Amino acid sequence: MGGDIPRPLFEMGKWGFFITIEGIEGSGKSTLAKGLKLYLENLGLKVVFTREPGGSSVGEKIRKILLSKEDSMDSMTEVFLFLAARRENVVKNILPALQNGMVVIADRYTDSTLAYQGYGRGLPIKILRRLNKIATKKIYPNLTFLIDIPPGRGLGRKNENDFDRIERENLDFHKRVREGYLRLARIAKKRIYVLDGTRDPAEILEEAKQVLYKRLVEKKKIKPMRGE
Ligand code: T5A
Image (cartoon, rainbow, N blue to C red; front, side, top):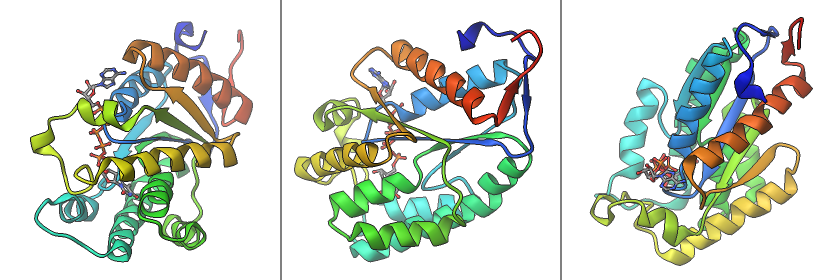
């Protein structure tokens, strides 16, 4: 199993490996990201963690605007802000790390826009895909973990008083986002791996580690060295 492999049994190719983690509110994305980062570092890999919205200095400022409870905003304004933050993150963090053969773990990326602004808000998926393409310079993940959990359960892990602007949306909105994510996973079967988020975090991490290990080897972005 991947976790038992001592370092440095891997050598990274020139171009790194890009992992994104997706799911509704409180599904356990940050928890999984931390576990995977540690796992990969123990394999001797250089890992960059980033989150969206955010990740860059400009992106973190945009995050504050996007999640502020004070302001309401037009759905398309929201899209442009998420994409502006994404563009900065790609240019400043994701692309340079991949070009330097690192593994990038992103807590949310393009699928969030499709799930929330597309399926949640009802904006046309086709247009959002096109905008994502422009914002990302066509840098797409090698592997995406979608942590699936019923909305009530995810939101129930958080303090209602601290809910941000999007968390405050009604349950139907969050249900549409969840269904949207599952639809995206059916469309992109090879890239998106669905994890049952209702289980214990350690169990979820173990399954993700196994899948990740296989994908790294299959993709030949990372080559097992002698003795493997
Ligand atoms: N958004 C984002 C868009 O609408 N469009 C976009 O394009 C983008 C990029 C971002 C918001 O912006 C929206 C989506 C979001 O509404 P955020 O803070 O990044 O906000 O997203 P959240 O999902 O709100 O992040 P959270 O940190 O709240 O949730 P996580 O990361 O999914 O969950 P995590 O790991 O922090 O865990 C939450 C709690 O649950 C516990 C943890 O210990 C923690 O207390 N937990 C578990 N408990 C039981 N069982 C498990 N398996 C657990 N895993 C974690």
